[in-house]
Image (cartoon, rainbow, N blue to C red; front, side, top):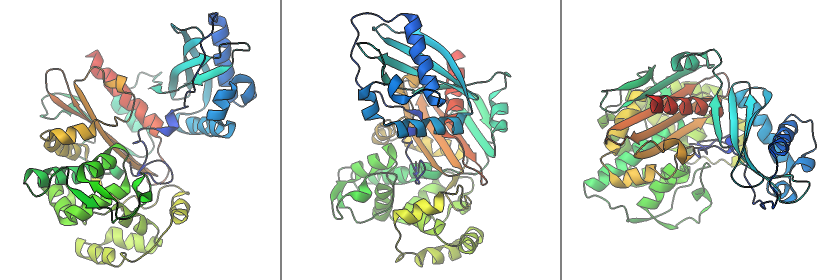
Length: 434
């Protein structure tokens, strides 16, 4: 995603999601199995730490504390409650096959977060490993998927259907335009794929790194002039949502080629996204005064292009970006836009490109086990404060292609990646039950 200092043009895609994960450290296996009561007590202690009711070092092993300092753990706890509601308590403990191992489930107001826990091998059997990598929405009222989407603050959309439209599991505002953050990079990948198919370029062509944007990503720190292949740039752009890699590909292809792909893919409302911004241009625009942003948002395409031309020599640093986005959503009408149906259309073009499918499959945005019932899974997501998109390309065992595309926009407040991810997981589970 296009991690802004918050999450993504992030991370998550990566997705995915640093907020979801408490990293596990190595654990020593005990020679004496802990009883279920002992495992439950330690799980309850973890909940007490999250609630601020028990000392961190009393519950977690030294190795874990070194890997995840107390301040970091406390921050993760705050992010959990901010995204999925207040902590309710321990929900369940399932002893594992190994000694001292269990799967713990912790109940929050709007989701149950679960994952493996491992105790030390010697007394006092503190927690040596913990990975909260799974969550499920709490739907006590039995709401439908559409009703759950409607209850989120802001506007939401979902399309979970076969690409050919022959079967639809969920469709909510699927034709409505949404800001999609770094999901726009699908159009860059498709434009590159088309250029290669026409014989203009090859995946292993080497170019010099001349562009520089801001995280998410790593390539902003690479030496200027570094030789990189187009395949490497595309993989970095999709798998870790690298913004510098994206801008470099746009420089190689030309803005016009990506804009042509937007139109040729059948995008239903391209005017809102034209001219097609680089990530650096988006950052520069968002750093401007409110009046300048409002002017760009209201301008026609020709005036927008003139405004962008005036930005080229401007400089900025990471401190400026962090300052601007620290207060939440900022003019999310200045963004890249697509409907869920538009995303299905661009995926329908990418299914024809085996290399692109390999690249989309590097980072799935959540645990791969979530896609064990599918023959193939690929992913791209995007976010900035007030903007969130998750978009998966899936193939079932019969060879049929599917899309699960979800968007959430709120110009007044940040949106919760964890809460939205829980709905994505619920949608996938609903497909498995059918």
